[in-house]
Length: 441
Image (cartoon, rainbow, N blue to C red):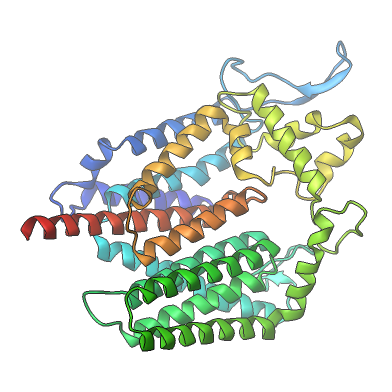
């Protein structure tokens, strides 16, 4: 399913080449002058070199009497272990690069940005409904087709923590659109929009909880608590006391409805999942039916990633290289279990894994692209409710990435980048409109 992603990325670039924008300049001209475009292109060049130079083999060195990996074909160039896995990195990140450039240079106004955010929120809500129906049917096969052999899934996600992180982000987008509708100053709020975005928010929130991802459950409630406090505080400064009380009661009613829906479909399982949190820190705890990495495992894996980065500081060990080198960074008594243990192909810390596999250069180029994309939304004093809540959701996904691997899912990566790019476009438009209004006055 990854090849269509590359084709969609190429289609975005083609659209930028042929479509004019309202500002009067062609998107391709803006892209050529965009430093983010060149930073992303250099990152893709790094991945291409890792793919071209891949081909390191596991062997036993009789002179050292030790196992290891052969050098790359060109020893002074960065290389991945296998070409197939290195190609997957290109299939992941080429569409992401195309998406970032399109969001920065191809969006023609605030209407398109809001429309795209609405598509994300509605898509998430529909996916949550599908997940609820699939889960309610009692099937053990994703899409009722593929048995994942005991691995828990939700909706179209074959890993519950990916589902949890995705629906937290979709909840933030939905609530952000709801908040924007409530605080519109150019017209009264539309009842249909309020109901639609409120329902989307409830469904995405329920999806985050019914994924049975402990991180998704906790982060979704953190998001709801922040949204309630923020929106009511913002309304307190603007509304009369009667309006503020009515809105507060309405917000409380929506939250209770979401909690009741969640309880109806999976309350006991959610309670049981939260109760297993102690198993992640207590090595004497009995192994859970769905295996959970212990805190000690996670610390050891993070240390291993750091050691791998020190061995390959500038350009990394190549995409997916961490799982091959992990055994050599662990104590000898853990060597056998490291390669076969469930979940240890990844660091469960996305920044650390990207640093180990792409080095300081690759991780730095990724950071430049993300900061460049989000900069208009970050460097602004008065953010709209839409921007504030979506940024909150994006930050929660980043926090999750410090203990898990949401950005190893292209679905989450692309949705996260799209959300940042859209709110950046919204803030750029708002800033230009405000500047024009002030100068005209």
